Image (tube, rainbow, N blue to C red):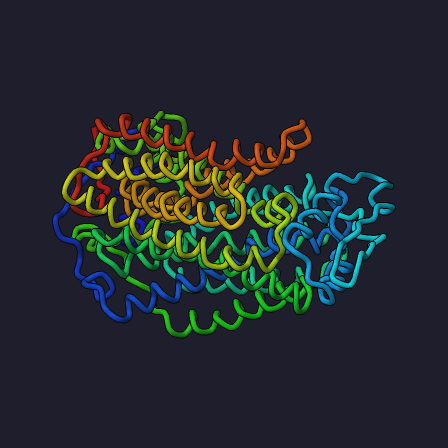
Length: 549
C-alpha cells in the first residue's frame, strides 16, 4: 500500500466502522508561505484582476435586464401594452422642443390607452408655430416584462447556476483553481457573445443556460485564490473588495448597455461583452500563480490537501452539514459544534432572502424606470451607471471593515449585527427609490446601496469562519447554491403580484425593501442562535485527526 493510501486510510478509516471523529487543533500561527506571508504588490494585482473578472461576470449576467425591452420586441415574447412610439418621439422631438409636462402628458396618454384604442389615439401639442397633432403617438408593443422575461432572467439562469456552482465548489478544493477559473471565463464569454446571434426565445434560453454554467465557476475559484494571498484578518475587507465587481458590473451594464442600444443595437451589447472576457483570459492564465493553501504546520506535514480523493472531500462536506449518522457509518464529533448547529443554516437562509431582494431589483430596475416612471434610457443611464457602483463599493468596504473590527475587538459572531442593522436602515431608502419622483428616486437609491450592500462579503466571511479549511470551497459552493435558489426565483413573484392587480410599485415594495426587512430579522435571529455555539479561534485552520474507541 502506498504512503498516500495509508494516510487516507488512517484519515477516513476502513469504511466499516463508525469510529471516526474530528478534533480541532487550533494553531496561533499559520505557515508562512510566500502567498500568505504579507500583503504585497503582487497580491493586490491578483485582487484587482479577479475584481475585473467578477465585474465582467456581473456585466454579462445583468446585460439582458438592461436590454430586455428591445430584445423582447425583436424576439416577440412577454407582455404587450400600449407604449410611446419611440420612433415618432425621436423624430418629433428632434424638430420641436417639448416641455417636460408635454412629454409626461404623452406618456400618460399611452399608459391609459388599451387594445385597438392604442393605435387610433392622437395627441395635440401647442407649439410656437401653432398647434400640431400627432395621429400615431402610441404603439401596442412588447414592453419587456411578463412571465417569459422573469423566467429567462431569473430561474433559467439562477437555478442552473446554483446546481453548477456545487460542482465548481468541489473542484475549487483541489489545486489548479487558476486553470478552472480561466476555463469558466472563456465558457461564459463565448456564450454571452453567442446571445447576440439568437433569433428565437428558445435560443435565448439555451444561451442563458450556458452562461449560467460558465459563470458558476467564478466566485468559488476566485475566492479560493484571493483568500490565500491575504492573511485571515484581512479576509473580510478582501472579500468585500472582490464583491465590488457586482456593483461595477451592474453599473457598467446600464452605462454600456443603454449606450450600445442607442448607437448600435442590443446585439452589440452581447458581442462586445463576450470579446472582453475572451481578451482577459490569457492575462489570467499567464500572470497568475497558483497560491499555496493557508494551513498550519501539522496539516502541511500530513499533506491531507493533496491526498484526499473526491469521495473523501464529498464525505467531509456532507459531514459539515448533516450531523446525524445517516450514511456510510460516519459520524461527527462535538469538537465542531458550530458546524452542525441550526445557526449555520439560518445564516444561509437569511443570506438567501437578502439575495432575493437584490435580484428582484437587479432584474426589474431598468423596466421599472422605463415603463412605470416613464424615464428615458439617457435619464436612467445618467444615474444607474454610477449610483450602484459608488453606493455598493462604499457598502461592501464599510461592511467588511466594521465587521472585521467587531471580530477583532469583540467576538466573531458580532459581525451579524452589521448584517441585521444595515438591512433595517437600508429598507426605507429602497422604498424611496420606488415612490419618489425623478431624480430623488435615484438619490434615495444611493444610501440604499451604501448601507444595504454591507452584507455580501461579511456573510461569506462568517460562513467560511465556521468550516474547516479543507472544504471551504465546497461550503462556499453550497452557500451560493442555497442563496441563489432562494433569490433567483423570487422575481417571478413580481409578475404574480402585478397580474393579481397590484401596481408594480407595490409589487416591488414587497419583493425589494420588504425582503430587506425580513433578512434583517433573520440575521438578528442568527446572532442569538450562534452566540452560544461559535468557538473563537485565532486562525482559519481546523486539523482533522483520527481517533479510535
